[in-house]
Length: 59
Image (cartoon, rainbow, N blue to C red; front, side):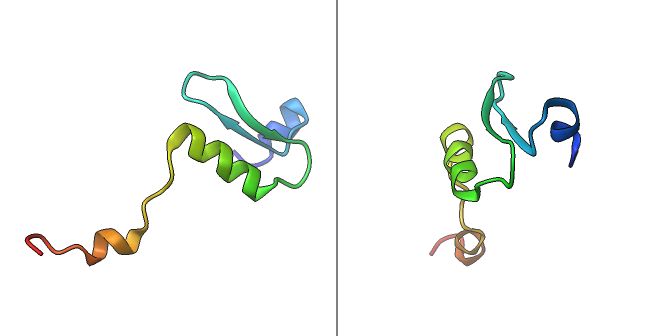
């Protein structure tokens, strides 16, 4: 929910781990690179969509 973390806790963005612990937080404009590092640590790096689309079974 956009805005809720800031309203309730004073943060503009939060990344919550699956176990409920805050993995990353930002009080101001979120640092995208820092967020991506934290997200990759806990959830892994996203796969490129083009790789899945380019794969042909049996090739």
